[in-house]
Amino acid sequence: MGSLAWVPGEDDGRRSVLVPSMKSVPFAASARTVFGGVVLSLVLVTGGAVHVPSHPEHAPPPWITDVVTRSEPGSARAYTMRLVVAVDEEFVHARGDSWESDARSVVLTASDLMGQIDINLVVTLVARWDSNPGRLPEMVDDVVSQVGLPPDAVLVALTSQTSMEPPVYDGWASSSRPVIVIKVTEPERTTLPALLAHELGHILGLDEHGPDHPDDDEGCLMVGRGYQYGDRWCPEDERAVALLLATIP
Image (cartoon, rainbow, N blue to C red):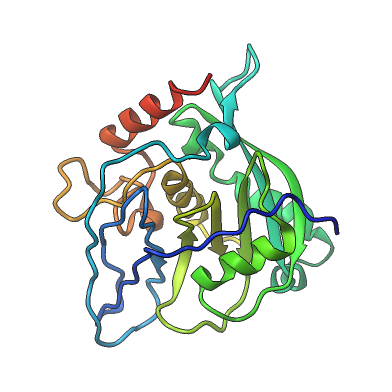
């Protein structure tokens, strides 16, 4: 398969959460330099601590005008976010001949949640890549080196690897490139829409809220556990995204 334009980069500044509990916990992450992964709630990680990085002054993600554009007149949503989906060999093995259509369906489950912030999702390409059974942050460079970094789309990597070293995440957003990695091991997982929207929220420059955030409740997508049950964006995030999208020509 031909490679798209690959822009190499490092995903430094990310933070991991280690908790002595069967449940994941919220943690802070900077929209500019630190995008925390989402901790898998069914894996026990013993010992450890929560790293809370400082938050530099926010600035729009440098890629925003590349991956999001204004929609054509008459469209249901004012803005369109383009996605290139890459699936690994484990996903293909699990899905069989329907792997390509299934990949599109998985990613587009987030359409309704992204529609709440006036963004339409469009999958422009589905590709394949060979993953190693490592941690999701380590898969970012692997998928970019094989598929390439799209010049005008978010790269969404889907992996069905089940063997991973702790800490184990359900999703990860790169800090330096518009790339997210999503773990898909259950064919009909009901939390996938919220998980995808949560990680795409990071690509839009949104922070992961701490437990003292005033607008957090049981439905907010950007709290630490929002990917498990979130069904809406909190008012602060809606305002932040609206201001960001208004800068798009």
